[in-house]
Length: 209
Image (cartoon, rainbow, N blue to C red):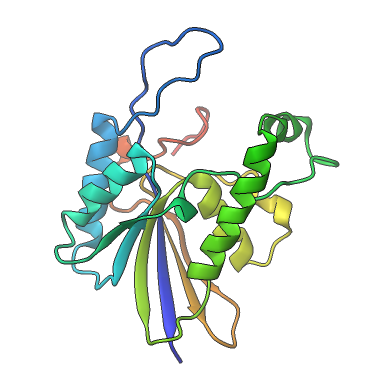
């Protein structure tokens, strides 16, 4: 029975840009010094794992994280993919949800509500299945929303339950896919490779580790 082991990692801590004028979106930035350290340590954690490929989203913070991880994985191909980028995974109906969730969902444009779910569905078709041609082990460097959607999908939870999932920067989630059985959730938000001062980044400010 062929098995796919899918490792999902959130990108490292993002470098925060200078203050921008009101109404202007800040520029997309890469990793902070802490984020680069997180990514390097995740690479060391994964050194020796026989990956078939590393995939990452197109934004600089994901691409830079993947590059630093791949430095510890010589010879393993690295691919950029829009499917595993930072996008809304589902055009979730806010009815019945907490008011804060409704406001959050209302901030997405019509294009984002159409394109995000389309890309997410493509990512599931590509990665959330047992492989057809032998065992595969792959790493995806991505963002919180997609990790939340993969976990929700693996647990067959209601679609709206992707909301409320928080991921550590460079936390590791691992899923296993085989034909004939539901997906297996092996690890969620594993940060054993990070010292305490590099953990909990990307989580709510009142989180106590």
